[in-house]
Image (tube, rainbow, N blue to C red; front, side, top):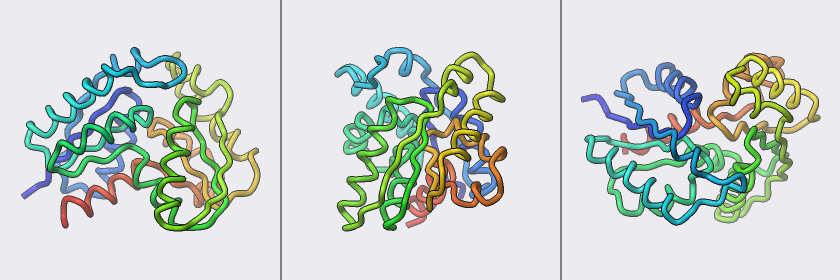
Length: 218
């Protein structure tokens, strides 16, 4: 019997990369999407979640669970704290967008370039990596990068410029053991990287699909 995975999104461009990751890594899964664009519209520029946002995320996850989901992935990194609070009430696996990737980073003492187009996502992902590293007793060396202009480009619908600016910034950033793309919408930029650089990339969709398959198959 197919496993039903609900993908909960706050941002439309996050949908194609993770759906493609399921298609290539776990085609047997039944993947369904739930989009609420009002979430990001109501988050302030500092990324701090208002108290009502926690309830809204909880209701979305509860709705997904009631839709007979075997597992849920919430694809918006900014909403990680709300997902943490809400999933404690659910009996099925619920993953934050960057969770599996952060765990993989924390498993190794390496030099990591963490790349986000939204500055407000960087401290959340950094905290997740450091928390996972503390559990494992590791100390990855983190450097953060926010490609100038990429967020504005994708907000204007210019995906090509968005991807190009990410790729150029990553290539110019120097030598790192791991390049972590912190947002699902950044994945198409991988195709513009050199083969050597792309080989060092960790992206949230691929890591999330792998982890969710393990969780629902356990």
